[in-house]
Length: 309
Image (cartoon, rainbow, N blue to C red; front, side, top):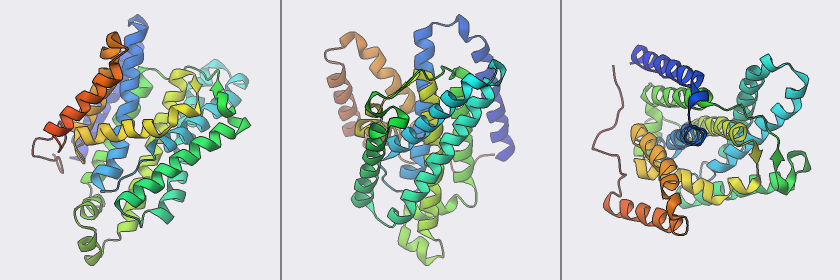
């Protein structure tokens, strides 16, 4: 499984680099949408590790994305004027890792005291966390306060977005299919039985929370350097809902389904732009219809990839 997964990862990274090399010849609008798709795949797959594979219900993923985005953007704005152009990829890569790491630490700080909660209680706490993060950035002059951060270097290209998405999918898939990852599945299937078998549910929940927050932070850094602008309003409650819908629509715990749902729900609003007055109504109706007809997820077909060779 591991050698096959590594081969697919290398092919995906190579394809991302090759496509990125020729991206100057592509339509700028379609290229931007494609980068959005890559970022949303990272968000959906990382949240699926928390909500889908471990059975928690987090509504604060946009908060982790905001932490990573603001930290990475501030890092780039501070260092980019003092370093030569050839150092830009190094600054960008370091900024993404820094943003992801701070988001992961934030996830640890939130997860340890709250992940003993269940269901609705956990959802409410994580929702409150996301709003607290948004208000902190909205009132912090260091991060631009309500006007946000502007002039962020536009460094996110196809290779960075889809290469990061490939790494995220690789890490989550290998983790879930590993011996340690069986703990996530055990906690998801029956937490009481898992505890009776010697599995510590809190440890596995916190681990999933931290890893999910790390990749959400990476996605935030990519988003900041793609839009060149960050505003606290872009990380509100509705952003977390958008990511949760991708996971539910794709099928909880189904990595491939979640990826397809992330692609579909990124492209769908773009196709509906011609009906701008009714776009959000049509978007909501389509989601309601899909959830009524396929409540188990649109892309679930009775199997889960737990192991492959």
